Image 1 (cartoon, rainbow, N blue to C red):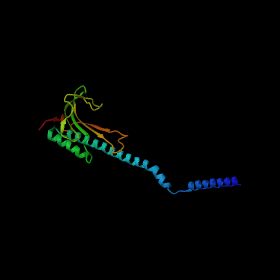
Image 2 (image 1 turned 90 degrees about the vertical axis):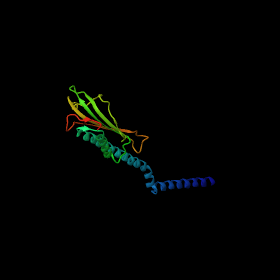
Image 3 (image 1 turned 135 degrees about the vertical axis):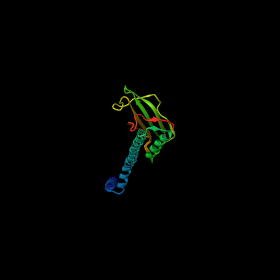
Image 4 (image 1 turned 60 degrees about the vertical axis):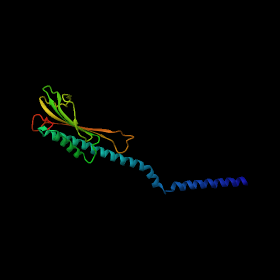
Length: 198
């Protein structure tokens, strides 16, 4: 008799457990919170990654514009003085706003292309991190130019811009990205643009 009662109690308790499990399976309370806990990290990563990517694309475009600016302004001159070169670099810095120029280098170089198509540096100036003007490439050194640019017995202005982009997020997974741009422009008003202090 006692054994029978125990068996009945076990059946009732197992039915109770099954009933509770069924009730738990049907219960939808808190389901959205659980879904949110799963989805939120993915959404946050997509948002932050998209923001970093967008900023990188905008800065790359700014590097292109700043490099184009120094080349365009230099190629329109006939003789560039120190004051004019400083003004050219200042204009490029203004184009780069509102971003910091703390990891940007801009270089303007005049190249003489001889009758064999070999380009050598006539003069070169650069600015590093938006600072004061410095000497750029070594005068007399050779520069390899792309086909079609190295026209014999001509002069060309080469504008170069580099920038190291550090994403605002995810630096543990993505290292600094080097961005660069180079433009080649023919002198517009003279055959060769000269460089003087004053």
